[in-house]
Amino acid sequence: MSYPPKVAAIRQWKSRSEMRAILEGGPGRLVMLNMQDNIAFLRNGPSNGTLTEFMETCHELGTDAYAIIGEADYLPSTHPWGRQRKVILDTPEERIVEITQPTPCGPLTSLEVTHPGQKPARTKMFLEEEADYTAAMALLRELRACRAEVIAHFSAMRQEIGENGFLSIFIPQPMEMFYFILHEQMVYHFLDFPETYRQAMDEVEKTSHFIIDCAAEAGADMVLFGGAGTEVYNPQMIEDHVLRPAIDFDAHCKQLGLFTLMHCCGRTKIYLDNHWFDRFSPTIFESFTPLPLGDVKSPEAAAHQLPPDTFFKGGLSLDTLHRGTPAEVTAEVEAAYRAFGDRRFVLAGTCAVLTGTPRENLLAVTNTAATLETAV
Image (cartoon, rainbow, N blue to C red; front, side, top):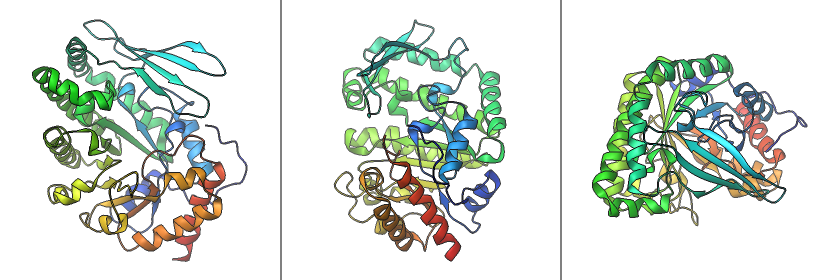
């Protein structure tokens, strides 16, 4: 997705220090559009230029910039354990990329297919057999032996970003095994080889705490954790491999002075029904998805059940951003300010901005927000 300069956004994006001051309780409002297709480093390696170019794109659109460094970029691609990408087919109709992850037990491979106007889809994942889990666990143990390299890599990114925005490190919830696996296969693996599966989850948790330590030492600003909604898991998996690790990650990050963002898209009503937010309070929670895609009837009512010191991140329909007019987007931003303006609130979509979302609609978000902030 490319956004050549056209209409300039009102200068409402904030520097790193300004963003930190707001999350620490100061005045102001953040607008954090998760533009997954524009994030320079997310999950599967560099996708759209450098971090500097990503920051410039965010600022052109007027959104507060937070680069998300995913598990594919804990180490540079040139490292022996770095992930490699190779284009094996590139036509106007289809692009296929083979992704290779070296491990001490031999390489794991995955295939990523992209069609015009669509997000990449995985047709083969790294983890499909029990032996793949053994290889992945060996890799995680090797990663934990690379502390100096990981910190140096994160530090270089922090230096490149400077005051232009946040450096955020993403750790997937353990059951997603660093995005080596398809969501619909997780339950089957949990049943097919439960002991190996649980061992793998333990290794992921250990590695996640290692990454948190490295992020803090490198000067990162925020750690993101969580993943997809709860509809694809059984209740025991949610308790053991989503909720409990999230509580532990949140506590660890806050001990080290890191902000936290808990992500859960899809069906999130279970968080409220089970009073899970009585057990922890991330800096930011993203997000409550309304019907029909989610199961929350009123995101406004749900947001007011969050701990008072937790920011609710959301308020915008990804479908309206993608298919609506600038006027419809403007009306939705105004409605979000009316609904959530009396609590800690980050204006955003419920997840990543959809591929093909018009630039004019993104500008409608940031320019309307800037106008509303000025009017306060």
